[in-house]
Length: 185
Figure 1: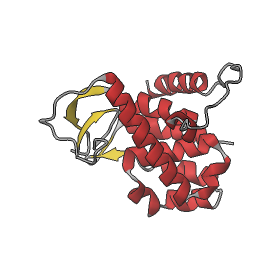
Figure 2 (figure 1 turned 90 degrees about the horizontal axis):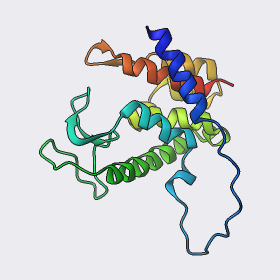
Figure 3 (figure 1 turned 30 degrees about the vertical axis):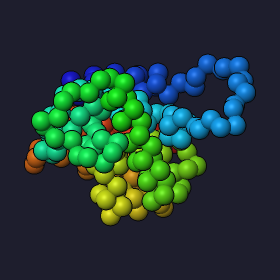
Figure 4 (figure 1 turned 120 degrees about the vertical axis):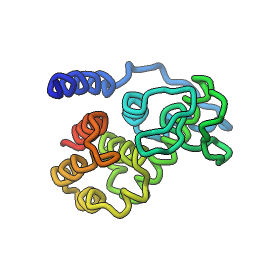
C-alpha cells in the first residue's frame, strides 16, 4: 500500500516539477514587486499544497496547534489562529500560504546558504521548515548534513522526522520521502 502511494506521489511530483512552457517575454514595470512565487522554489508551493491540504475552517493539527488554510498558524497581522476564528476563503488561504512559504524559504536559505545553489534541495528543506519550524531545523543533524553537502546523509535524517504524538504518521512518512527525492542528485 505504501509503495503504491509512494509511486503515485513520485509521479505527481515529477509532473509538478516539469519546467513550465516557455512564455513570451513581458516587459516589467519598474515599480512592480516580485511575486512570492518568484522568490520561493517552484516545487515548494506544490509540496505544501499536497501535504498540508486546504482547510478553510480552523482545526488542530496533529501537534495540537490551531491551524487554518494550508497549515498556517498565524495571520498576516501576526495574530495566532484560534479555533473560534471564522472560516477564510480559498484566495486568503492561498495568500497566507505564499507568505508563509516565502518566510520559510528565506529562513532555510539563511540557515543553510548551500540551498541557494539548487532549487529542488531548497524546496525540500524549506518544506521541512514549513512543516516543523526553523528552530527544529537549526539545531538538527539534518542541517549539519545539508551544510556539509552530505545529501545521502540528509535523506537519512529526513526519514527520522516522521513522528507525531508518539506515533509514526503516514502523511509525514510520505512527506519526508517526497522531500528526500528532491535532495537526490
